[in-house]
Image (cartoon, rainbow, N blue to C red; front, side, top):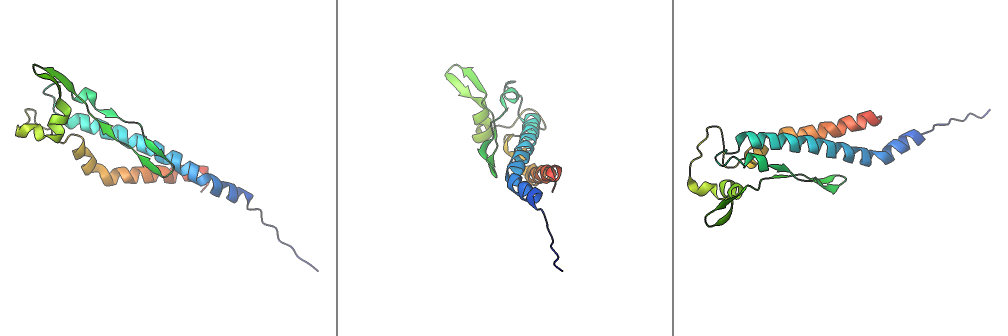
Length: 140
């Protein structure tokens, strides 16, 4: 008497094959979420003296593919002065506003960096959670 046993792992093999793509899509979605929150928090703490700085904070395109993604935000508030065009955003953020104090309470000179430093762990966790959820939805 001969016994045989069959086990079809084609579904598992398909899931394994699709997992990198699923994880990458979920990571990209999580990165979009994080960038939008980062922008909102940067807007909240950006100085408002010139009135245009907060409007110019922009989410940049996510670069990279697969597991190698890079996301960023930027600000480029250019104002016209008697001596020409002046990048107010750069001056405030990178040149410490010439050492001047900010007029508006609750604002910070490092308006892009401070939210990122404060939330880095939380944002990494959000992206990881999105990847995990994406894989769970796919059947893991």
